[in-house]
Picture 1 (cartoon, rainbow, N blue to C red):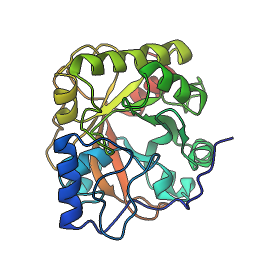
Picture 2: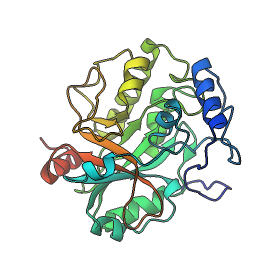
Picture 3: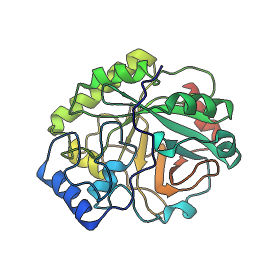
Length: 294
């Protein structure tokens, strides 16, 4: 049973002020450590453990705050095999409506760090399956709080496991700009490479699957030193919110498998914004990823 947090799940923080954004960016540039941002938006609670979601670090790093203006990518990349990623921020989801709107796959937040379990994971994971959505789990990495192997074990034991049932995708390591403090979590490029490799090896041993890596080009190039050590092992899920025909991918990866092209999309069955993603291939290749077949 997943642990419940005392506060009511809410959608992503809104109403960032210029002062709040500048304070957050300054904290990143100065390497401020801690469990909460130094200057949250006026009227909003500081981001606390468990509040992180895919792309939050990128928003803060680019000075956008936890929300941004609608991205132009929503309409321009709406063809092909479409997917979403969600967490407790989206609240209750009608997964049948999601599937009927054309969404074929989803990754759902399961864990963060070493102790946080998303309170919406159990319902999302089961309901998505029965709605016919090919789904998987993701882990928000916190290299500043424990080792990669420790977090991989926590993830695999709390939603990140894999089964050959035609609807389960391999787990995702969400490793991006640190929304709680210094950009690279206080680690050198050598230390970060070792942390990612430790997570990968432990997850592979637990599940038999290669973990998918979600990241941005800017974070990967800076914090791993444009490392090419994962390209032959981990499918790449790149975040690049743009109307360009293709994303900018991190150095060290030859191509992308999934592209998060906007953070402010909309989907029937979900209230508010949701990340939209595109798979690099047709449905048969998506099923091959789910089933671990060539």
